[in-house]
Image (tube, one colour):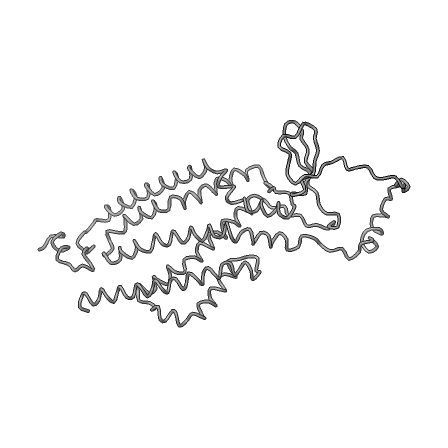
Length: 351
């Protein structure tokens, strides 16, 4: 009876290793699984610890677009914590989730090391090819959402109904008969004297070293700023013609949750070329067949993009649909290359 090594050497180039040659008992399988799971959990723990150490940078990455849009809308760039534990628990959850993503290559290696002994050489080659590409596309989709889509999405959502127009400026319909007539403040009679010059400076940028007690207006951010106790304090202003404002009051937890969910959705959406190439590799669908059903594919991707984007506006949906369509075409190119390589392998084996 040939030994496993002899049988492996006598096999064809397309399947140089036969998992049937190596047999492990149930106990050995469980021991190997336990060892790999412990290593995987250790990697996840180290990834979470690293993310928790750099939590300020990560929170800046996740919440930076929200603060930037609030400033652009001349709103207070702040989030609220609805309970004392929310900042800590939210940061801890973010560290665990991002730590899992950081340790994903190491964790996938441990899973691969456990299942590789049961796979043929051809199957191992597929996994080695698809897993790194899938991880890279997921990360690329998440970063594309954070830096490109999220600012556009937040700008639309926050500005969707920023001001409620007043249909009763005089207060006759809602106001006077409910709370009485408004109080009239007496003013001094008009004079012909010139008005005094404004005592508060209007500056485009903050002064480099403002003295204690100084006061100025930042024209760029529409803020009244003052120097007090060796720090600059801010009073934000709003236009007088926008009295009925809807001011957003987002919580830290809900903002982080929405950001992570949408980033994950974009990461999944960017898996289109992997799915296309995988179908072609297994022979489920050829590149030609998928190319002919392009209209149906685009329709399905449009539905997925509409589901993934909660705003519902066409602009944000297109920000996901267009990259998915481009990646679909790239997947078709990869599928054609895979089919050509498979045909060459079959011809070399005399099939």
